[in-house]
Length: 94
Image (cartoon, rainbow, N blue to C red; front, side):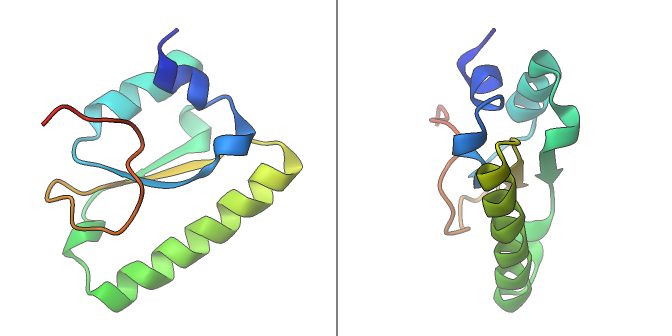
């Protein structure tokens, strides 16, 4: 199992992250059998900053609750331009 797939099984790492492409996170979620615990959102980078803040805050709350309960939850926002102020899900090749 790949590193990202293993990470998806770790509730302590639950959170909101960004990636530039959804292919790797989607494949890792399938590999880990965690497709229902990994939420991939595309197009968020095209929303107004205020809207993004609301969405991210709500997702961060869900991730914190799930982390505390020991149940993994990853919200992955697809951001091809790498403009969102979120930590990267993994180190992507540029």
